[in-house]
Image (cartoon, rainbow, N blue to C red; front, top):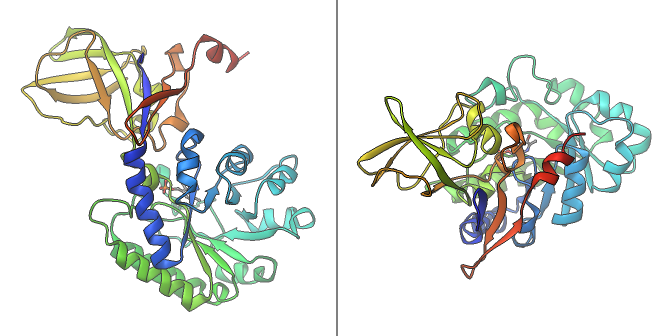
Length: 364
Ligand SMILES: *Cc1c(COP(=O)(O)O)cnc(C)c1O
C-alpha cells in the first residue's frame, strides 16, 4: 500500500471500546462519541456496538452522526445560525444550546425538541489556554447559577465539558463536587446531564471502578441519566500515520524528509508544540524526521533508530487518530494520507484514497 496513509487498528480500538462498555454497565452512564475528535465513519459500525451514539459541534457533524453512527444523536454548537436550525433538529434527539440567548432565539422552532444548556463551571483541567473552556471571559456555556435556574423549566438537561485529557480521578471527583455544590438546585430538576469529554478513563492505570461508582452516585443523587462524550479516550492509541523516507541530509543533525507533513497531517501536535511519537524510540542513531512541506518548522520530532535511515525506509507515527485525521488539510498540496483499516483478523484494507481531484475540489 502506498504511503502516506492513516492506519486504524480495530483490535487496538476494541480495547478502548470494551472499557467504555464496561463503564456503562457498571455506572449506567451512556457514552457518545465526540465527532470533533474523530469522524472516520468507516469504523463507526464497530464503535456503535459499544457506544450509545454520537455528539457534535456543528450541523455537518450532527448529520454525519445521525447518518453513520446511529443510536442517540446529540446536537451542540457554540452558536447556531438561523438557516441551520431546522436541519439540526431533524438530525438529532437532543439539542444543547451554548447560551440562554440561543435558547431564546430558537424557542419557537425548538420547543418540542429535547433541549439542554451548556454550563460553564469555571474550572477545568486544561494545561493550554487555547483549549481551556474555563479560560477568562470564556464564551463556552452559561456560568451564572441564578440565570441558569431561571430557564430550568424550558430544558431537561445540562452539559458540562471541563475536563481535558484528565487522567487524575481525584481531580475529576473534586470538580464534579464543585459542580454539585454550585448547580445542585438546577441539577435536581433535570432528567439528564452530560459531563462532556476529556476524562482519560481508557488509560492503562485509570481507576475505572472508582469512576463508575462516582458517576452512579451522581446519577442517583440528582435522578439523572448521565452521559459522557469521550473523544480522545475512545480512539487513543488506535491509529498510526504510515510514512516513507524520501531523502536524507545532514546539517549538524541527521535529517530525514518523509512523504508527509506535520502541518498538514498531524496539525494538532504543531499547535500544541508536541513531538510525534514512534515506537520503539530506541537505538543508537538519532534522526530528526521532517515533513515535505516548505514550512521551516515542519518537523515531526527527533527519534532513535537501530540503523541510519535511508530513502525508502518506513516510519510509523503513533496516536494518529484523535484530533488528527479531522484536521488534515491540503497545505502545500502534499498528498493527503489515505485511510486504511486493519480488521480484527489482521487483514488491512484501504478504505479511502485522496488524489489531485480532491485537492482541486477543496477550492475553486
Ligand atoms: C471536545 C469536546 C469533547 C471531547 O473531548 P475529548 O477531550 O476528546 O474527550 C466532548 N464534549 C465537548 C462539548 C467537547 O467540546
